[in-house]
Length: 158
Image (cartoon, rainbow, N blue to C red):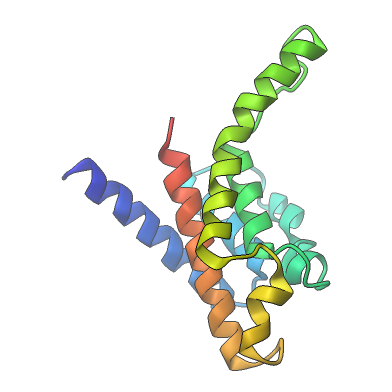
């Protein structure tokens, strides 16, 4: 199978898995993070999902930064984050290293912002009425799926 086809299949699968988690009652951040853990076979204890719980609803339901986006950052961090930030000997080396680590995160967030025009939960959901309404839930599921797909995309990049 062609490499691009395999990548697109992984993206589509990640989108579907995250959307299914939303239907099961996980919050936006948990959906994206858990779908990544499933897809990438990350060897973390199941309790690690607790790291994402507080980011739902735009960080504790304050409707600030979208939970799907923060979940995507958590998910990508589990794959591309520094495993030992103190491994480099000097602060200068650590700073240089983290600047390189940030690159895929920055690109992913910029891609989300370009796609939606904002990263803020209340702005993303405002056109869709009541926070508990069907239209808003459909919109959130789409954003969750999109963010999970981007994690799959950026996970593949070197």
